[in-house]
Every structure is written in structure tokens, then in C-alpha cells.
Image (tube, rainbow, N blue to C red; front, side, top):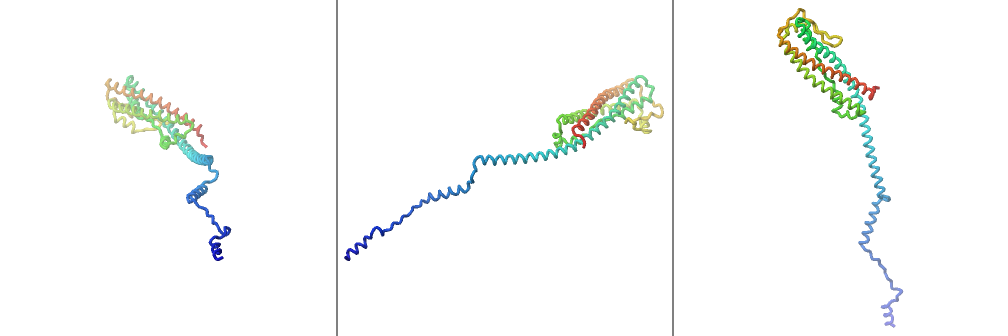
Length: 287
């Protein structure tokens, strides 16, 4: 019996034998599951290519709208600046018109006296009083023509000219100042002609008589001319040599010819200035 008991203790029954089932864990699989989970956390739902396209379009429209608003603001500011400068430009043109009209009257008078002097030197050399008056009046009444382009130059340097509308108005303004440059250049030619006259005047005219004519009285006529007084006594010509008379007469002739062309161009420039003022006032009416 003792043997049987021992045998039974060495071989317990199956039903009292417990079996522990353990689950094997793969480390690589666990790491992979964690990475997938992290990726899912960072991926917001609905972020497909349509979403990114929408964001791009919104950003594009925002930048474009900002640029448009800024350009619109600058355009409004530039229009105000242009209007201010345009008013100054009109004032400059009106000054040009006044100066041109004054210069035209003086130059016409100077040219008429030059022609009269040429006739006197060749037909009535004994009329020394009128010869002296004519000779001195010519040089006293020559008017050089210049333009007041301050406002135009400021607009050109600041880049405001491109904001002047319509384009034909801008073209007209530019053409006006380009054509005026020709007159300014012509001033130099007239200056050379008058210098030749003044040098050759010494052949015929007494400087002291000229001085007395100036000293006595010079007045501005209502027509802007400089009026030269007649000499107090009948003067004499320093030379009656035909060659001297012809040399001086030729100088006055060349001066008169250049001056007539200059007067014609000055008339055209004055009319151009008048039309330009009317055109500007039409496009930029004063409030």
C-alpha cells in the first residue's frame, strides 16, 4: 500500500495539471504600431490636394488684393500731386504767354527800326537825328525769349508725368517744351548778331550822343517798348564812307532777317501756349 501511495503521488491526475498559456510579443511589431499611431495624430482629416489648392488660391487672392489696394492708394495720392503740379504748370504757361507777348512787341519794334535805319542810310543820310534814334532803339528793344519750366521739370524728375491723362495731353505738354528749346537756342544767334551791330556802330555813331539819349529819359510805353529820346542837337555821323555805311547796313540787315524768323516762331509758340492752357483746363477743371 505504501508503494501504491507513492506511485499515486508521482503521477497526479490530469485534471489537477494546470497549463499556463503565454502570448509571445514581437518588439518590431510594437514599434511599427507606434509609428503608425503617431502619423495618424499628425494627419488632420480632409487635407487632400483640393484643400491645399484652396489654401494656395486664398493666399494668392490675399496678396493680389493687398497689392491692388496699395496701388490704388498710391494712384490716388499721385493724382492729387499731379493736380497740384498741373495748376502750377498752368501758371507757368500763363507767365510764358505774357513774356512772349511782351517779347513779340519789343522785337517787332526793334525789327521795324532796323529796317528804317537801312532805308535812311541809303536814301537820306542827312537825317542824322532819326538815324541815331533808329540805331539806338534797335539794340535797346531786343527781347530774348525764355520759358518758365519749373513745374514741368519737377514733374519730370519726380516721375509724375506718366500720371497725366489722357495721353494726347501729355504729348502736347512735351511738344510745347521741346519746341520752346528751339527759341532758347535761337537767342544765342540773335545775341551774336546784336554784338556785331554794337561793334560796327563805332564806325558811324558818337558814343557821347548815345549816352545823352539814354541819360535824358527812357520810359516804358504802354505797348512795353523802350522809348529812346531824340538827341538834343543834331548829331553828325563819324563817317560817310560808303564802305562803312554798307558794312553797318549789312549787319542790321542780317539781324533783321534773323529777328523776323524769330518773331514768327515766337508767335507760333504763344499760340501753342494759349491752346495748351485751354486743353489743360478742359481735362483738369478747377474746382
